[in-house]
Image (cartoon, rainbow, N blue to C red; front, side, top):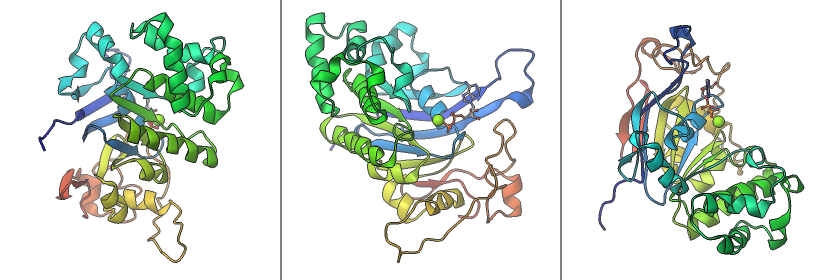
Length: 323
Ligand code: ADP
Ligand code: MG
């Protein structure tokens, strides 16, 4: 087997908000939403990014796809540095790099029929002729568990789960290499969540798509992701294969997140760790280890020294002084 480069490489990515050249911004207003994050996603892999609300997950997803500029670092797709491409070069790559939102409804025009909304980008990018669009849309409707008669319906006629299917259809019709799915099931009822997760797992099997799957819920990423990164206040705290992360979590933050996930087998006891308090203000994050203010195990060193993100066993990285 030949070694191939990862499809996506995120290299020391930083995204600060409010540090533009504006002279009115003081340094303390700078939000370090993403503060030096690195990870790689292999072709065909689904990488899960988890963490509480405000930890910088969406900002990473949007930065990768160049939906906004970055402060420093690099994002490479097939070895190509995306933020160095011209607008035209980026536009040519757009169909290959897609985004699925938590709320696809907000991106749908209420007066445009669903079939036309799904086919729109194909025409915009000149990927097929007007005559071919309908056939292609009907094909993805079926893949996404929607019916042909849905083609002529309007957005308000769909349920939450169906709207997410529409969001997925709009992304996959472009035959992308890579999709960022940002909390695609978080707004859905649990039973509907399971259906959409099943749809993702069918897409994984049948299409050669690489995913970045974002969720604040570790029980959601477990089903779909082979590798998982745990983010806290813009910093990667732990990164490992699914089996290592769930079987041998090392960071107290990961352990705390996992201890909140219900276990189907009640005889199996998991160490329960309660995280105290709220996530600190990212404009003024704690010194040392950013997690120390909420960590039940924090020692003196944690309050002063930033822990190194290091590989403690093969493909298992953690940033914690106590590991
Ligand atoms: P998550 O997706 O994990 O909930 P986000 O990436 O949305 O986190 O946000 C990370 C931090 O960056 C938050 O503190 C958020 O308020 C801030 N942030 C996100 N987008 C913007 C923006 N456009 N302008 C200013 N601050 C932002
Ligand atoms: Mg988000």
